[in-house]
Image (cartoon, rainbow, N blue to C red; front, side, top):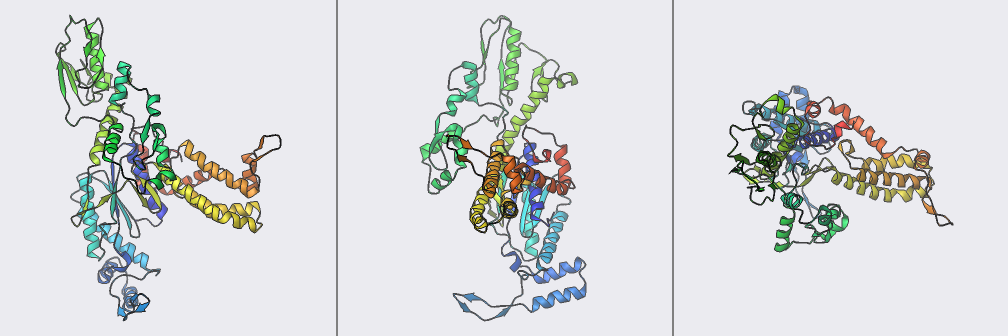
Amino acid sequence: MTAKNPCNGGASIFTLRHLHTHTQEPLYMIFLDLKKAYDTLDREQAARILTLYGVGKNLLRFIMKIWDGDTMVPRQAGYFGRPFRAWRGVRQGDIMSPVIFNIMVDAVLRYTKQRLAGNRQGKKEYTVFYADDGCIAGTDAQHIQKVLDFLVEGFDSVGLKTNTIKTEFMISTGPKGSAQISSQAYNRKVTGTGLTHRQRSLEKVICQLCGTQVNRQYLKKHQSTKRCTQAGTNFQLTTPTKQRIIRETTIATPQERPMTFNISIPSSNRHSIQCPRPGCQFSSYNIKPHVIRKTMRRHFCSKHMGDTIIIQEEDNFEKCTRCGFSGKSCNNAKHWETNTCIEMTRKRISYFKKYEKRTALKAKFEIYGNSINRVRDFKYLGRILAEKDDDSVAASRQLQRARSKWNRIAGVLKTQGVGSKIMGYFYKAIVQAVLLYGSESWTLSKDKLREFSSFHNRVARYLCDDHIRPLEDGTYYVPRTEDVLEKAGLFTIEHYIRLRRATVSNFVKGREIYNECTQQKSMNNRTVWWNLM
């Protein structure tokens, strides 16, 4: 698919990314970069393709005559060389050049689609291009590599070479999720010994980006600050610190090789039974042995989802294909409709999805036999795409840019003696356009939305010259936000975000991907932007 508007192309990619975060499926995204795209296009191939697209002889002759008259002069250090005829590329700034280039891209996409016609095997890819900025996305790494090879081959045929250095890929895995607590937390829950969650939150940890010691609970917030960014420019972790961070960030993950445990809990048993899984501190005790057996089976179902337990005294027990619980009759509609089975099935799917994400991070892609770089965030069409699908990264960037823009024009507007509402128009046209760029597909937290509202309201108070100020009695005068916004001719920041979402929803709702989004069942409780429209 080719996008005529960068917002539409970006919205499609953002929607696709949110969709796969919604379903907890890893998404492979390759961002193509073409070397000197407008300067290296093969004109003979372009003329042949234009003919196949139905361009008439007279128009084609007119285009070729313009190209034949192109003369270039090299310049170096202020000196000019001999003029020569250009035989490749299209004119920069010419109104027909983007149209011709889009036709070439469309021809390459159609060629790729034709090559994949018999090799899809039910696999699907998404390809978005805006001019020479391309993105390939899909859930199967081998299929995406095949699509990439066909695209590179197609672009080579029209004289466009792919830049192996600037072409990068990202694996969008979404947030960690909360399928299961760590082994450390679970053992503390069972034994009652160890650090509590509150105590672990107050522990001092080393930031792996800048080396500063901060409380664990503030680590994520610290890493988004300007101080951390500046301090991390020349910081390198020592080997012992790296090993410590690896230990601290270790989370519970499924075993690559599931284990089976065969134990005996006889009817004469009168003591507690320890979980046979190495490292697990769980134990069960009851005067009734059959209760211990059921408790141990439930423990394996909820904690050791990848493993199997066989109790010798229980015969003909089957394992539920959905929730993993072992019982006499688990694979039937009656058991599947129970709340326990439904909840454990959801947790089990989420548990193994985490393992798929870890496996997906090992994927690599190649162009011309050279591996391309993997990045954790990428600026595509002016918007920041983060590996963890965290919109706060893009939102913070736009807020910083809007503040910088406002600092440059605020004083100018004041010195000209412009009215509040006129200054409000300038603010909406210049600053707010930067502030809310890309907000159509953001899902912001309350804290981040509060930052946007604070900046928006502070600007409104400046426009009306109605600031928060101390009074003689020691109290503060705080103007009502509603009154200030009305004087400046502004609405709340939430109102403007809703308007932008409504605008882009008219475009997205006509796309196939929107139907996929609304039909897919969520695997987590995360808010998605198409539910906010």
